[in-house]
Amino acid sequence: MSLAAAAHAADTLRTCLRAQDTARIIAATGASQIEFLEALTATDGIEWSRVEMFHLDEYVGLALTHPAGFRRYLRDRLIDKVGIGRYHLLDGEADPGRVAQQSGDVLAARPVDVAFVGIGENGHLAFNDPPADFTTERPYVIVTLDDACRRQQVGEGWFASIDDVPTRAISMSVRQILKSREIVAVVPDARKANAVKACVEGPVSPMAPASILQTHANTTLYLDRASAALLTETNQGISTQSRRGAKTT
Image (cartoon, rainbow, N blue to C red; front, side, top):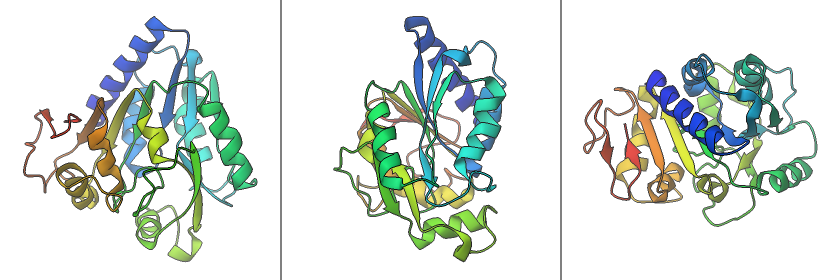
């Protein structure tokens, strides 16, 4: 799954860079993205010096040195590995309102070519937990993390206990993610199966935030057998069309 998603992402980046000077991307983090990023950064033929990267979300108040911090994650697994030319990391230790505003101004200046995203165990998209705000046009928002989201971070080993998980985060808004020209969603693991079923086969609803991807004309969802296990409309390994046009692989 990760190899297939990385090959797709690499093709998209090469196509963008043949047509324009810079490719703008949004990078996701978390355990679900590790193998995908390993495969993508090992792929030849991408001029990373011409890529501009935006940060999807970050905890409020978490130090840069904390192993669960997404700034550290992106530096270690993407930025420093390939030499991305320009990047915009969310400083969770600074004033979150100011960070959201400043980063949002830069992000909104030009369209994003491709967004790499995941889906949380509670169906969240970025850190937009249910019920997600589907209406705000602000590029970044300050959100309160629900208990399900915080428990997921403990279950993945990023924190020792739920009390250690920050309660707030800076998150790219749902509408801003949807403004991306293309979205590649990488969602492995049986822990995501319920969320995948709700977001792919259920109605578009703020209670299943990633269900909003059904409305995007150029989204591809990559699943493994475990995360796709509860689907009734998609067979393993076969690319099909959802009701609203987003592809599922």
